[in-house]
Image 1 (tube, rainbow, N blue to C red):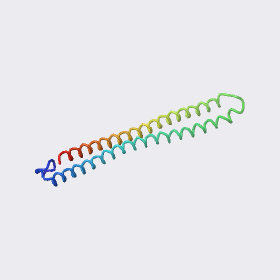
Image 2: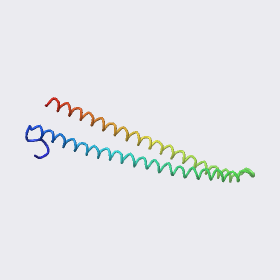
Image 3: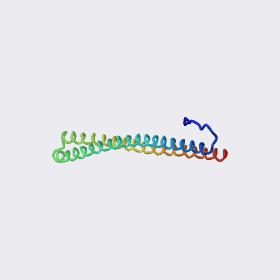
Length: 138
């Protein structure tokens, strides 16, 4: 027997072939789900790195803004405005990175969930069809 189709109509051979096919399908599906999860995890890690970088920029923005306060307590001059502007630039950059990181994380989670649900639905439909054929054929 070459594994493609049984040579006889013996019920035991047919059942063995069905079981072997089901085992191959399950192994293949586990591989597909593993690949989908790996891709989703990579996207999630990228999103988390962006958020961590944004938090570093946020820390710098707070430091810069706090550094502007002492300079601004004296006579209002251009120096504290520069410090405040630099802190504001870091704040805007941090906000943009947080927004992009959150968007990517949500998309990665949603895409991974949808792909896994789709794969499981296809498998369930395949098993329903397989059981219908085996019931009708026996």
